[in-house]
Length: 71
Image (cartoon, rainbow, N blue to C red; front, side, top):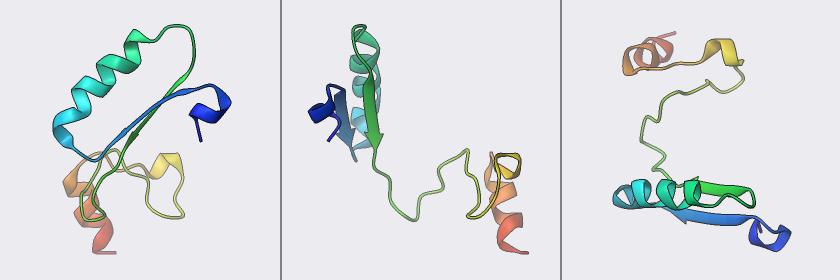
């Protein structure tokens, strides 16, 4: 979809390709770039905003995530 509107787009679910994709994105200077990193539902990707929360509720580490689950 991004390419249809003139954006450069990259997508991966392979953690070993992340650095390569970021480097490629920073090399592009003449148009916007969309980079999608697909992660497993079970992965704790930080920073994280809880469902229904605001940006001030952002969790930045596993301890905050664990505490949120105990509420």
